[in-house]
Amino acid sequence: MVVVETNKLVRTVFSGLAALVIEDVEDAGEVIVVRASTRGEAVECPACGTPTRRVHAFCERRPADVPVDGRRVLVRVRVRRMRCPVTGCARRTFREQVPGLLERYQRRTVRLREQVRAVVRELAGRASARLLPVVGIGAGRDTALRTLMGIALPERAVPTVLGIDDFALRRSHTYATVMIDATTGARIDVIPGRGAQPVTDWLREHPGVQTVCRDGSTAYAQAVRDALPGAVQVSDRWHLWHGLGEAVAKEVAAHSTCWASATGLQDGPRAATTAERWTQVHGLLEQGVGLLDCARRLNLSLNTVKRYARASAPERLQRVPTYRSTLVDPYRDHLRSRRAAEPGVAVQQLLREIRELGYQGSANLLYRYLNQGRAEDDRAHLSPRRAARLLLTRPDKLTTSQQERLGQLAGACPQITAALSLVGAFAALLKPDQSNAAALQAWAAAARAADLPHVHSFVRGIEQDRDAVIAAITTTHHNGRTEGVNTRTKMLKRQMYGRAGFALLRHRILLG
View (spheres, rainbow, N blue to C red):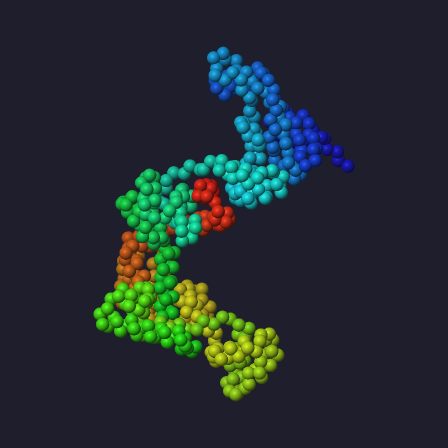
């Protein structure tokens, strides 16, 4: 049996109180009370700096310390009130402090305060108030918020490469803009609003920015031009690829008649309405009526009229049917082979056969599956979104069956073939290189020559922001770190259920 010396155990457990003389440790139930005193050394006057040992009086402080065994620890420290020996000093008496352990006006030790700060930085008010008592630290939500707001914000210099992005404080109502060091990812500032004027004012108040990384926002582009005419603007490569992906997805959906002949297009009232509206729009356009006037006459939105005007035939506006996966899908091959061998086989007979194979669905589901003609397809139905995904995926990431399907898509329609070629050429431009500026011009010319109206719209957007796009594909600067920080910023906002005031939210963001 090993006997541990009591004094040694106390020094081990309360090693953080080594600056004090521990006189007694009392077990008071839920609280452990440590009685201690200062070491009686000379103390410098905070006003004149003269050391003194003259004691004016004694007093007691009761700061809380880090918990032990899951219980709160209260330190009752006997400290001295000292008298300054200098006659003309403004501080006649003063209370001695314990540097590194106790600070003036604080009711927690320094190490306990740092632990509380670490928790409130991550959890803020209510969550901290729920967690801290569990680990033996007493604190309410108001104390947690006060502690959080008391943490000094780091002082960061204005970076030469700045990233700008926005996030919603309340979606569709109020927004804020976050400024990020695009090189290190450090948060620089958060300002309310996302328009051109707030960003312009901030850039003028914080000179030194030479390069600005941003998305395709025209407001940010105008703000940088107004505040920093000589700064280089860099568009975000991910947003460029995303914009092209959306345009290609629309083209794939518009050419469903080419690659989805096996399953057919949408039929019924919706298809009839689409054909009728296409006829009305093109009839008015042939008479010389403008797009805006067409929208007013037909009571349609301007964007809808534009979409109908771009389509050369009503079938290009129709979509393939979208089917969800069902319990019948694993037995599609069996159903197709049985109906091919015996066209008049009863559905009830097919139901019994697939139930023997493990089918657990209903008879109505099988009836609907067969009536939709899904059993006659050689393979599972391909939606326009999945078809576009095949075009936008790197070829070396596709499986053998996906590559075969992609070849069928490209061979079924010359527009899809052109889109596939343009996607591959644009993907090569996203690797920064000085030669990409000339290559972008050639790519834009090829895109305009193809019969792809949605891609033409994407090209026009690139031409409007040409300098920023060229900087994105020729330099190594990017907005990736800004987007990542902004994603974590949105997590902080949601963590507080969107009810935090802007001051508190800004404080948490800048402390991250």
